[in-house]
Amino acid sequence: MFAALAAALAIQSSPEADVAAVLDRLNAASTAADGEAYFALFTPDARFVGTDATEHWTVPEFRAYAAPVFARGRGWSYPATQRTITIAPIDCRCIAWFEEKLINDSYGVTRGSGVLRLTEDGWKIEQYVLSFAVPNDRAEAVVEVIQGE
Image (cartoon, rainbow, N blue to C red; front, side, top):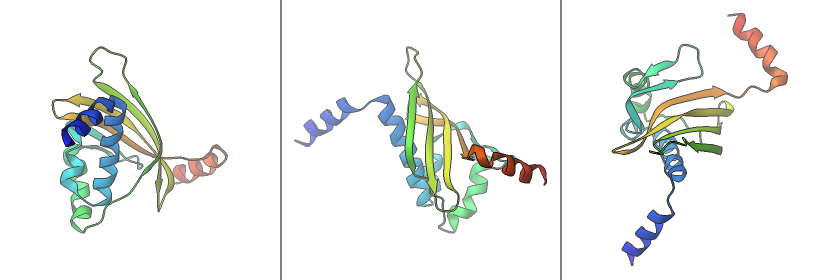
């Protein structure tokens, strides 16, 4: 019976669902401060682009930043409330990009976007970009603050 259920679930899987599962696991691992699980979801040559203009990290650089935070048992949580996933219309169906609306206790609504590649080990994140969602009517004030630094 279990084998039939597993086979039925495998048939129902889609590349979009598989990519969404990777992104959900990313948030679960960061929330749990599980650095090994978190960084296993990235390709070795991936990039993480954070909200600060200086945050354009390779995986080793980002791991070095996150390691002390995770070691204290702290992580970060950005669960998706909306997500769009697109599989590249190429024969291999091995490239996906996404954009997602996220929620964070400290920052409120944020956005994530990026690219995943299908590898021998499944879908892996090539690039992840985290950004603040600034309402247009507040953009001028935000830009003034940034330019004032």
